[in-house]
Length: 130
Image 1 (cartoon, rainbow, N blue to C red):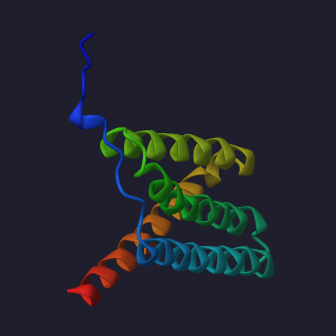
Image 2 (image 1 turned 60 degrees about the vertical axis):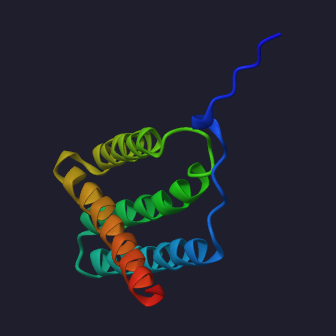
Image 3 (image 1 turned 30 degrees about the horizontal axis):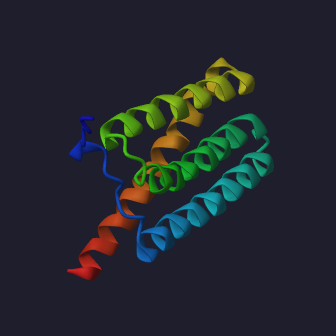
């Protein structure tokens, strides 16, 4: 009997505690920003746009946690990244349409801002380690 062993399917190590802390802190920051965006929108009398931005920030904060969980799978990271980004974007557009066609861009802006927050947090962590 012939056994085929593929080197490309070896499991990756689990994310470190620092990486999980970084993702958690970025998600907490985005959740706080989402609450602030919603409150400011309500105070200014524009609950729709404030809620749309808040929703985008909240949805985007999930991306880091998803990435941390998916990196341990024996699937190429590029494939999981594309799948995550496409899925979150589609969810953002669908929710944005619920807020009204004019507010779709605010949900996507919130998604983008949350990714920038995660990238800045990762950059700060990598500079602190080095």
